[in-house]
Length: 270
Image (cartoon, rainbow, N blue to C red):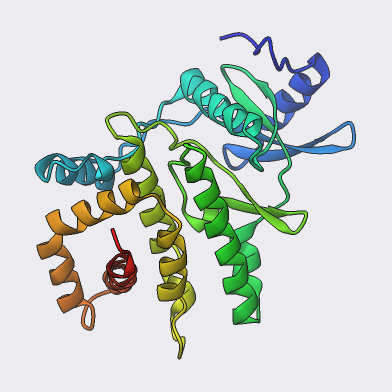
């Protein structure tokens, strides 16, 4: 694939990326060019983790496409698909990085501000932390209301700039085999599950409130997709709740998230 004709990278930027790429410790790294901070994402390898295979098996056995892992395309195709998703959301007016250039080797994006997750982790005021989380949830709801989805809506994939949250990292945007409602339900599940740790040790847990706010603003179809998932997985969720007091942190977090989601869905009239 040649340089994207809509967003070509100029030769000096290409030379700078090539000079830094060999020493970069991660496949995503920052460059400063013409006084601008840019982010370069290089093509990634396929995901071969056993957890991905297990996720696919569970989704197939229970006939739940919502549980399928994202089709993580590699190489030039993966970069092009992520660039296309970002452009579509930018055209729809959502706060995403601008696509500066895209080639078969890398995707260059504008700086979108700081990552939201470190800001949340550093916040000493719990009320301020949950206010920011609620804003991120409201952005996700607006995205869904406009007929879009993220694909990887964990809190780590939100940014913060100009006193508002934004959206990052669309590698998992490609979700074939799912309806729009299932894609959006998946977003909501990933978002809420990723918040459990912020309630750890809290006297007054806030996740139930955020779950209620976020799911109340979701579409009836997305809520129904979540109900279907919980019905099909009822035995496993019950086991997680039973094991939670004695199990590891992941199981306890899953049980806490499911309890908050179940209570929020029960409050919905549909």
